[in-house]
Length: 185
Image (tube, rainbow, N blue to C red; front, side, top):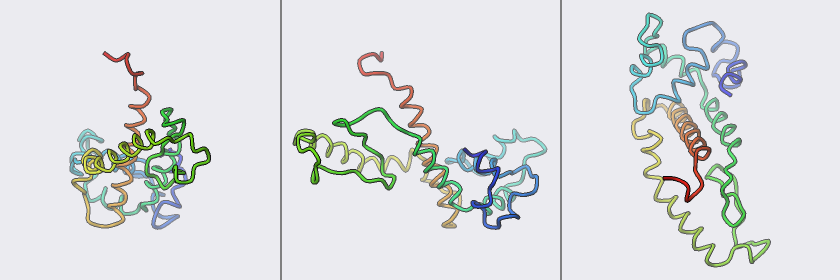
């Protein structure tokens, strides 16, 4: 997905036709990859890890300059496109419950089939919802949004979408590796 966006980055940069057009060490794809793996590390640490402290390791200022060329829409689009690919097989009363991603869910207040959501099922659903509410605090720690690397609103959005993208990727890997209940040791 990142490589595909990098082939035609015009809609994701501040100056189309100018930004990310020349060959550089910090390409469109590299900058997005670094943003996604930053987490709580310093810019210096991510550069050293990525370029293995070679002569080609660009200075931190080069990364900041390249990063500022990206619109938040670059990472937001990646986030939404990747999230759209996720289709967990787990359901609740036969329905897939989506995460908070702007989609809607018909509630039992407007049931198409009133027997589908009996009171006991609604209590379980409410408990899950409440669990999600109290999990938001721990989520910001899990996705590394405790320490931001900037104060500029556009760059904060980049970090938020990059962190959520990595979180969703990790969740997808966990779903794929999830053993059926009763078989785990």
